[in-house]
Image (tube, one colour):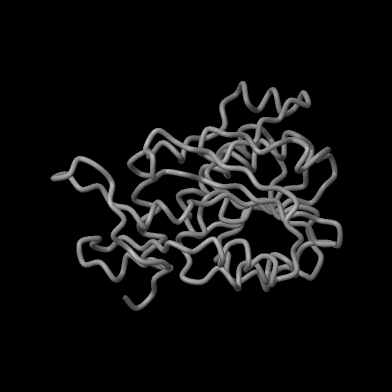
Length: 241
């Protein structure tokens, strides 16, 4: 595949057109609560980011990295943050544009690749938020390196992604259970039955060790087990000290 990111963009745009559940926008009630100091920041896996991880957002410069879709960005703006949204999918960005216009929110909405943040100066943001999306990049190293660069000293990087078990195991219908069949790291490009779908499974060493190598101090870790036993998400908070 010549350009994996172009294919990822096409894949995400197609999912948005089909109203996949994780592309749902913030509701009027969620926006109202955020304006009233009751922000509930969800990353699409039924567990909110702990408020103590981000604190008072008023006046803070926040980057929603690969975080378009009309959910996190508008909520953060309603909570008083100065929000920049960067995403590969124009369809997802359109959702932010629609809500920003309707709610009269001042948001900087940009189309771009999370692996390349060269458009932003060093130490531009107080907080970088990354909802589940790192499984669309073949190498998380440049992402962590760039996030560390654009964060101010004392800033934090909060991310969420899939645990490697989601890629190690596949359901075996004959056995009626999940079976460990794939080695990590995983790439859908190595599996002919995945069609044009592009997704990468990274190891916990790459996720946690990669942040530490970039300079982050990991100060928070949480998990969320979904109904499917292999659908296990984890959250980390990395600080630039």
